Image 1 (cartoon, rainbow, N blue to C red):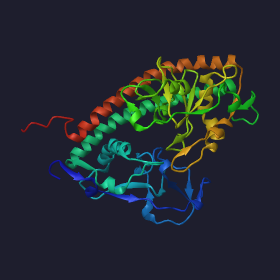
Image 2: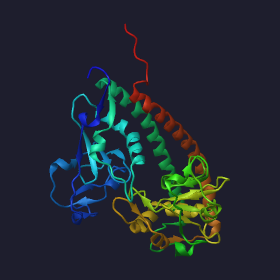
Image 3: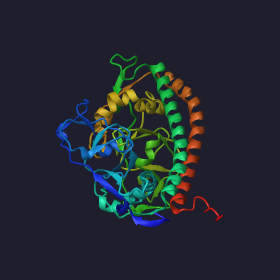
Image 4: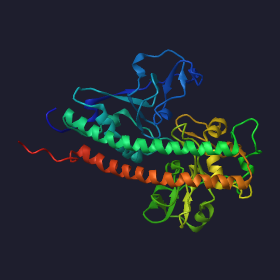
Length: 395
């Protein structure tokens, strides 16, 4: 390739579509080979195994790229060892030695997001290989592609380091929890347990649903499923919807509320709780979320958030109640039955004070991560437009 040219993605990249492996041979006992389903794309690993025969052409190895074609059109790099590709997941393969697949992989995520947002759906969005093949991209020389990849991966490496640091802060919070309250999933806990439904001040509640035409620049801020996966949510950066006072009265959030996602595109992300930071203006929530308001005489909101987020609680009580294949989720009924540990309120408040120390560190790293995200978002379109750096002057 002598100079940049615009091509159809299908002219330089092939897409291996997965096979419809029989679910009767799926298991979680490690019998057979991992199978990559849509839910496994974002984590890049699978906890599900397939114990039957398979064609080797469907084998995926570490470093291969995979794309989810139902629900969320995500792309990730596989890091779960040898696995087989299930239906509704595909893997791009270069058709020419003049294409760097990493260049394509860095180009695709925002394009896939635009396609996802523009795809109509009744229950689940679907992506076709034809749509992928028809995507247009500018392909410069191979050295130029690799130069773009190097720059983007350097910024992404910095972002990943900040994410790992914040994950360590999560681990620290879980260690503090264990130190103060013991193992929350122990068969012989230090404190009594009650079902969640007996530790709330109001019934669990699903959010509101509004048609697309109700959204606009004005109106009331509304929390959606994607907004709730960060652990906390306030009023900034949210979509707004035109609604009535009765909707605010019914679905209005306060700083005492938690939100739990009823649906998720990954098993690991299912039923993650989110604390509401009261924004000083009306804030409502949509139908993919469940409101949980802890009874103040029994639970503090921060403690309940930490409890429902704890990996041992999720492994023992939350994830076993998650259902679904392509889109996983938890129902009000299953959420209401989760057992909750009830230590004295004084200890819960002491726990919150200890967490405040890590909050200050977390805020610093989050600000750095946000800045790196803005940098990455500004660099990527310029890189693929060929304007990231000035052309060298002729000698």
